[in-house]
Length: 240
Image (cartoon, rainbow, N blue to C red; front, side, top):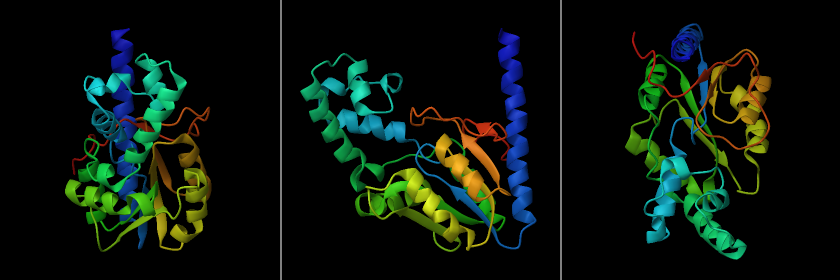
């Protein structure tokens, strides 16, 4: 069993390295390369924000750990023993208000290797499009602060695209952005952690190199297309 797990890990690393090298080759081979990166759980760790929000809600959540987190706050509360529906709704509403706010998103931390990788492809000439399902009215200021504090590329040849309104679903918004982003240059790669979103971006940019970031995602019964490489983070293949 151990040898099988090791074999899977090693072969996954080689597959990941090949996918990243392919992205860099595509950047070098294009006169106007564009790379799309999602933010939450693709470049930054939303689970760390989940914990910060829970910890802010009262001393009863101080011992909450990563392993306790579920995708929805209500499910997390049920997981740790809450049963009263009214209390779960009350706490969840307070959680949502803070989670989707400038104050809390500003403290987001980058996933391992993410800053270095985005900087590497940016330095090679790619335009970086941060395409996020966060909505601008509640989260733009904090998003920009987080990107700056983590030292992600900002300014020239970087574009931040956010939902104009929270009522739009992430998939609706990202699908609506495909034509606009396609007009900015040659989309050579897309990075996403949501299966639905990576699939629709592949449909929109069929010549790009898609990479699925396997961190946390919604529990919808959707799988990434079978040809899409999977990665856990960006720590591999940063060598020249």
